[in-house]
Each structure stands twice: as C-alpha cells, then as structure tokens.
Amino acid sequence: MHTTALRLAALGALFISTQALAAELIPIDVHRDANCGCCKAWISHLQDNGFKVTDHVETNMSEVKQRLGVAPRLASCHTALINGKFVEGHVPAEQVLALAKRDDLLGMAVPGMVTGSPGMEMGDTVDPYQVIGVSKDGSQTVIADYPAK
Ligand SMILES: [Cu+2]
Image (cartoon, rainbow, N blue to C red; front, side, top):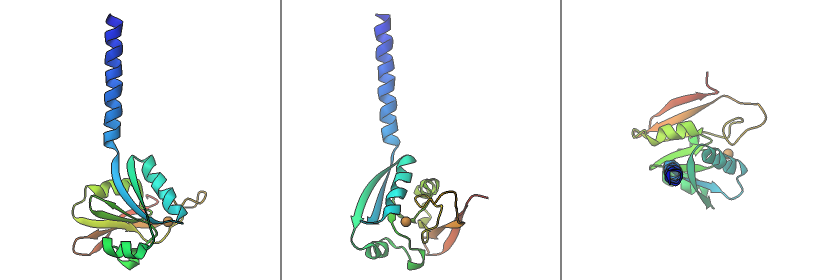
C-alpha cells in the first residue's frame, strides 16, 4: 500500500512538471515568405529555446513589414510579433526573450542577413552584427553586439 501511494505521488509530480513545462513555452508569431529557408532555420532556433511558434506564410512580406512598423532600413527576411512588438530578422532568442519584457520598445531588428546569426549558420564564420532596438518615439539604439565581446 505504501508503495502504491508513493508511485501515485511520483506520477502526480511527473504530470505537474509536464504541465508546467508546456505552460512555459512562449508564444510568438512568425511571418515569412514560402521559399525562405533561413526563416525556417530561425524558427527552429526559437523552438529550441522554448518558444511556441505560429508560422504564417505570406505572399507580400513588404506589406507585412509596413503594417508592423518595420522601417525599410531595418528590413531582413522574416518578421515576428511577440507581445505586440516586432522582431525583424535573425535576432538571437535571448534578445527576443528580453524584448518581450521591454515595454519601452516597439521592436528590435537584425537588419539584412548576417552570416553566423541564428538561422544563418555557415560553418564557424560569424560576421559581427548588432541588435537594434526601436523606441516608441522612433529612435534606434544598439541593444547588443554579436559575437559577444
Ligand atoms: Cu533570413
């Protein structure tokens, strides 16, 4: 009887931890072009880092970027949306997490398609890049430098 009770307790604990794990996944919407391979690689990077991605295949990404407030000079391939804020391009997951908590920002971007950014891996090559934050007044600031110094 003792053993059964212990087993049940163990099962209960297992169930609760699985539930907690599922609840901790962070929802994010990703808009991308159908033929974008590196966009899919970036989605995998998010999924590997605890995000639950809703994938939107678009026919007109420039219209999506305009609607979400991404300035043309910050543009990359895909555009994501988290807590009402945009994530443009191959932004590392740790920065996306930070953005979710930053209510002073409209969004952040890694402009272009930088070799070595998440989803743009090519061997060991990492070109330097910056994560740019866009404030509500439209001003832009450097949030982070990669590779980390
Ligand atoms: Cu890309």
